[in-house]
Image (cartoon, rainbow, N blue to C red; front, side):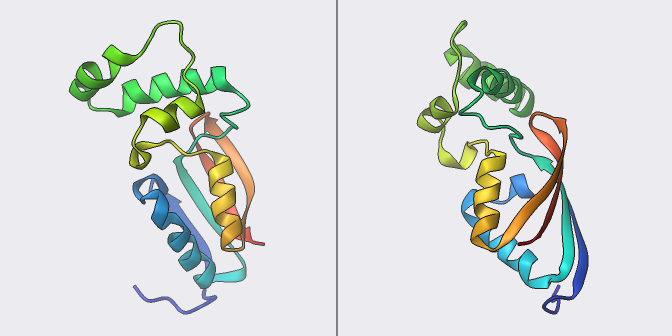
Length: 141
């Protein structure tokens, strides 16, 4: 669908962003910026780590273990992930980056802010539903 530049008041996105490859998200937000009116906004509901995982390794460990178990097909989790999880070990953001192919990384709110800044958009409001899912409002800088 072709949309004229600065022709849209509101974009609503539900569970789309995490389906877009990380290296394509900047292009997605460039398109959003192009069609949004100057006072327009994007409301997004999606999976994203809504805290700084480097600053809260214990919280990331809990979220990471939960997401692995509950978002991975059961057979894949039981056979290829669970055997490698160590009891008592706190899995950090750095562990994830070192041991997980980039296309399967979880991304944080800080990653999103960096991407938005590159295309001159900004995150203006976050409503956390869980530590890894929420509603986000994005506008022009």
